Length: 166
Length: 328
Image (cartoon, rainbow over all chains, first blue to last red; front, top):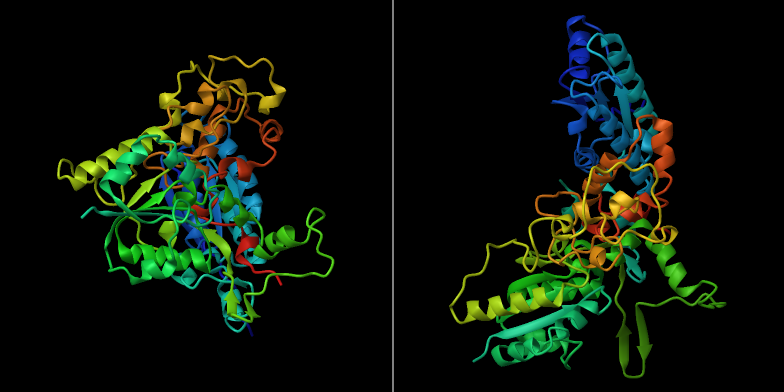
C-alpha cells in the first residue's frame, strides 16, 4: 500500500474575517484537513504576490488566500485589490507551468467557521489530486538520468542541486 | 604596476561591451589606470593565459551574460578565482535578461528551434556533437544547461550593475569610483551592493505627471494615437514596468515616449520583480467583479513575459515547470 500524499498548504488569513472564521472553526471543534499552515495578516490587501511565490518555491503545494467578503472589508476595499492580484497572479503562474488551481481565494466572514473548514478540506483534496508541486526539487530525476549520457549536447548544471535546495 | 582589468561575455548579446565603449574618452582612463589582461571582445587572449594567472591577481572583472552552457560556468568559476572584485555586469548576469526567457521552454525545444525550423533547413537532422575528431585532434563544443542561470546562482558576486545595457554615464561613474579606490581616495561600497544605479524606482525619475490611476482597459502602445506626451504611461492604459524597476536610467524610455520594460531589474528591497509588478498592475485596475477584472486583464496578452521580461531567471521560481524537465 502506498502512502497517501499529504500536501503542504500555506494559508493567508485576514485579521478581521477569515482568521476569526478559522478561530471559530477551532473553538467549535469542527474537523478539517490539518494540512494548512495559517499566516495571519491584517488584511488580504496586504498579500504581496511575493508571499505566494515564496511559498510555492519553498516547498508548498498550494496556497490559500482568504479575506472578508466583497464589500465587507475592514479597510473598505482592499479585498478587491487582493482579488485582482489573485487573478493576475494565476495568469502568470499558468505561464510558468504551475496549475492555477494551486492558488485559491476564499471569502469567509467571522461567522463562517463551517465555510472555512469545508473550503479548506476541499482545497486539500484538490491539491492532493494535483500531486506534489515539488518546485525546489525540479530536475533532480533528469539530472540522474543525464549523468549516464555524457555525450549529450544538453546537460544539467552540476551545481543545480545546491541552488534549488532551500 | 597597474592593476589588472578583465571583462567577459557569457550568454549575452554584446550590448554591454558596446555600452562600455560608449563611455567614449573614459575608456582611455581605463587603459591609463588598468592593464587589460582579458577581454575577448576587445583583444586577443586565451583561456589558458587566465588559467595561468595567480589567484586574485585581477583587481576588477566585469562579467556580463548569464550561464547557459558549461563553458560559461567554467569561465565564471575561473574569473571568480582570479579576481578580487567580480561585478555582475548588466541585466543578463544579474537576472537573466532576455536570454532568461528561454527558461519558459524546455531546452530541447530551443535546440529544435535553432537547428530545425522553417528558416533553418535541416533535412538530415544534423545536430551539434559535443566532441568531434579532426586530424589535428579532438574538438569540443560547450554543452547546454537545461536552464539559464544568473551569475550569482553559480559563483559569489561582489557587486551588481544592472541595466540592459548599463547606461554609459553610470559605467563612467563606476570606473571613476574604482580608479579613486585604487588611488586610495575612496572606499568601495559594502559587498553585495548594487552599483551604478539608483535605489528608487523609474517612476521616481520619470517627469510625466501622475494622478489617481483607474484603468478600464489595457492597450498596446501601437493602438494609442496620439499618446499624451506628459501624462503617466500606465495611466494611459499601457502596461509600464516603471513602478517595479530600479532607477538609474533617468527614465529614458518614458521620456522617449514608450513604456518602461524593466531592464534595470527589481528596485531596492524587491524580492521578486514580477510579484511587485502584479501588485502594481492590480492596484490600478478599475473593476471589482471577477468577470470585469478578467476582461481587463485580457489586454495583457502575455502576462508572464510582461512581468518577467528581464527577470525570469532571477525570480523566485527561476524557470517554468517545462524548462526544468529535459525533453528527449
